[in-house]
Image (tube, rainbow, N blue to C red; front, side, top):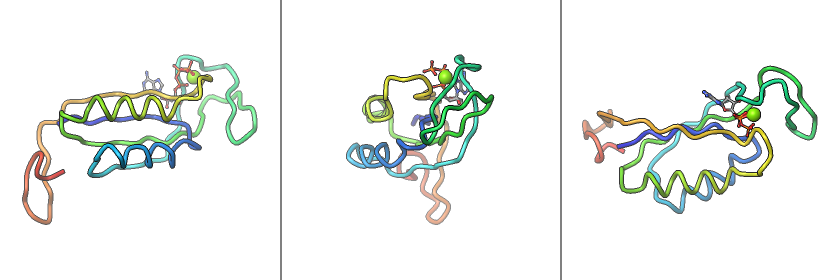
Length: 112
Ligand SMILES: Nc1ncnc2c1ncn2[C@@H]1O[C@H](COP(=O)(O)OP(=O)(O)OP(=O)(O)O)[C@@H](O)[C@H]1O
Ligand SMILES: [Mg+2]
């Protein structure tokens, strides 16, 4: 299993979620996040306004998926979240050792 963490522009969340539904994801966690990337200090557009601040609001999405759909998920997020301008975000991939579905006690792929 892999955990795919992506930091995306806030206005891209609905598009990303819709396109991921077609890939067969089982669940997703969304967190309001703030951060900066390597272009810190440059202006970025957020809700039509230019920001030159240290921390730009973003959404962090996290999905734990079977290895077999990892690449498809990454490709889908990359395509859907891209505007081509600075601040489009990043994707990080982690190995996941164990998953447990609390209600049923199922583990690993069966728990997703
Ligand atoms: N190395 C990193 N580690 C952790 N979080 C990061 C890292 N780089 C970026 N982020 C997160 O991703 C968000 C978006 O980053 P951003 O897309 O601006 O990266 P960038 O390197 O500046 O690229 P770009 O030139 O496209 O703006 C940041 O606000 C931050 O929350
Ligand atoms: Mg940036």
